[in-house]
Length: 406
Image 1 (cartoon, rainbow, N blue to C red):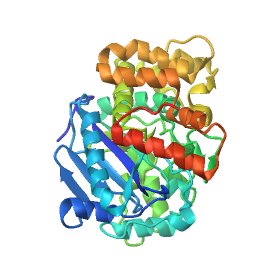
Image 2: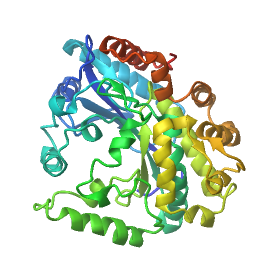
Image 3: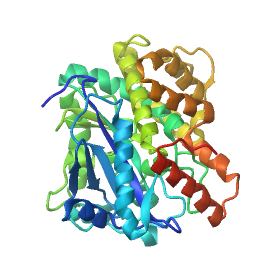
Image 4: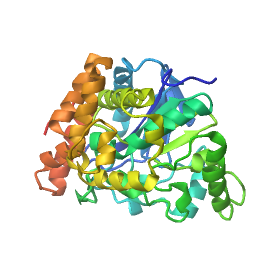
C-alpha cells in the first residue's frame, strides 16, 4: 500500500545486550527472541511493536509493527517493550544498554555475526567489508521511515531531507566514547559510518544523497552503479540494491519511503520518539516551502552539505555554522551554532508537537546532546570503572524511561 507525505511513519530503535555486572556485550539476541517466541525466528510480533535481530548477535531491534499514524504514544509503547526485554534478559544476567556505541567493546575480538536467518547475506557482507569494526558491529541508531507517493512527493521530501541531514547529529549525537576514550567526535558512529564501506565507495557516497529527485534517475545514478560495483563480490546475486544503499537517507522505492539513518540512539525511547517527531515537523515546514522554495532546497550539492555534516559530527550542537547560504534556509542571517539553528526551528514548529515531545526537546536544547551530557558526566575521567558507572546510569535511564542528567 502507498501512503502520502506524513500520513504514516515507521520508527526503528537498536539496543545493545550487555552483562549486568561489567556491561560487556553479550551476543544472545537469539536467546532473547527464542525466550519471547518459544522458538527462534528473526522477527517476533509483540502487538504494535516488532522485535528482530541485526547483523551482530549482541544487538536487538524494535520497530513499529507496520506504519503508524500516531507518534504520541509510541515512546511509552517502546518503553514497555524495553521493560519486557529486560525482564526476559534477567535469566541471562543481562540487560539493554542505550546510546549509539558501546564505550569499551573491542569489535575485533567481541563481534559475533548473526548465525541464523539471513546469515548468508551477513556472511557475504563480512567477506567483502570485514564487519569486525566499530562502523559495523558497534553502531546503534534510530531510523525514521517517511512515505511518499509518486515523483512529485519524492522530489519534495528528498529535497527537504537532504538539507536537514547535516545538522541532525547536532541534536542526536550520543557516541563520543569508543575503546575507553573520547574519540574527538561527539558522533563517532557517523564518523565510522561514512567510511566503513570504503571498499565499494558508491554504497555510502558522501552520506548526503545526491541531487536526484525522481525514481528513474535514482535507479540510473545510484542503484545501477551499486549493482555494477557489487557484481564481482556477489556472485550468487543475493544482495538487493535497496539493502546495499547506505547513504544517510536511503530511498526505498520497494516500499515508497525514505529512511533517515543519521540519528544516534538516545538514552530512552521517549527521547528518541520526541526527536523523530521534531524532525518530522521540521521536514513538514521545509516541504511546505514557507521557509525556502523547493528550487532553493534542490540547489544544494552533496559536497557542500557533507562539509557541514563533517563538522557537526565533531562538535554536535556547539558547531559554529558560518555558511550564510545554509543559515538562510532557516531564516538566520548571522553565524550561529547548531543549537541556535535547532532552537530557531523549535520556535517555528513547537506548537505542532505533543507536550511530552516538547519537554524532551526543550531538555535537549537546554542541556545539550546526549554526547555532550555523557562527556560532562565522565569529567575527563576515562578509567574503566568510571565509564562503567556512567553507562550503568544510562542503562537505568533506559529502564526507567528517564532523561540522563550528568
